[in-house]
Figure 1 (tube, rainbow, N blue to C red):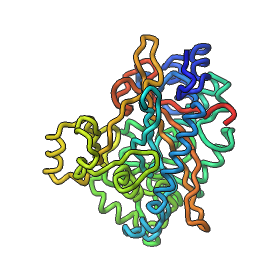
Figure 2 (cartoon, rainbow, N blue to C red):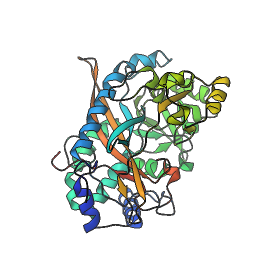
Figure 3 (cartoon, rainbow, N blue to C red):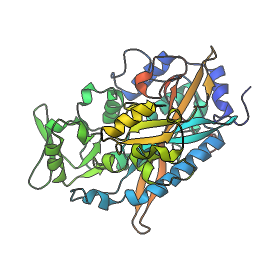
Figure 4 (cartoon, rainbow, N blue to C red):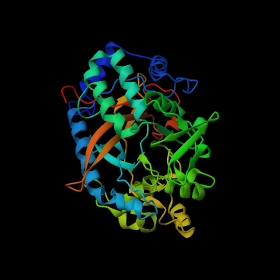
Length: 403
């Protein structure tokens, strides 16, 4: 019996029982829909469960996403980029926000995990919605995005945002060696743009950006950016080159360093507990075992200390890293589902938010472009921990019926 206040809509359990699917089936259909062979050889990436948000969960996610965007507004303006050496600054156009579903007494709530001004796994979610709509037709009218429901309307709203211009390109470093290649290549195919790498790029004296691939040189007027500059071996030289360009960007490379989880320590975020830098962790008035410390610039579950010892925290501070780590109160994840063997499965929700600058109001308008779920078993939510266990893996969170 599903509790009335469960974070998932009863439709989730109904569909799981009446039309169960295997991971291999989801894996194969996703690859077919995306048109890419670049998936892990084993079917470990995707969860096989159809999951629909309850109205309560959807309302919480929408309310807190909008509240966070409101608090971040002063940090999302074009001037922030121009102050860091970019002549052609643009306001942030995307925010990716992760929320954990956590225990709150005998019930549940959501808790902010982190955020960044970077697009990740949007195409994966779109193609997964197509797969779910095929397997469970009831979900076609419960898309994991805000606004008009049809796939065509999503494509129209997203194309100019992600892949505007006449000749766009997707920019990434060592793209073909990445674990996210499945999404990168799927994005390249969906938006009809080549994947280009830093060594293939040049910027001429007029600020025009060109790439050369397979001996063919072409100009690009729009970049869908997936590049993190600090990953480059010579990021300073490439940065100087990019700063001369007169480009239109989605996910401008400077925003990754300007808006990130470390800002949580500098803001008062509605509905969220206080966060601090490592050098101030005593201000939380919690024992070390009840906190989580994470490196501000890490990703993918790296540089994460859950319930660290006092000695670990002191060692990091003595090493001069007190301002490079964020400290948050630890939470207990809520078991949103259980496998057929009774193993609890937990969830994090990733909200990918489209930001549109309102010049007259000098504010950001928001639209939830995708809701992604990461289902995990007693470890971290990062895909690097996925082992193919029942229910585990990447998923999408469908909006409630008639929402």
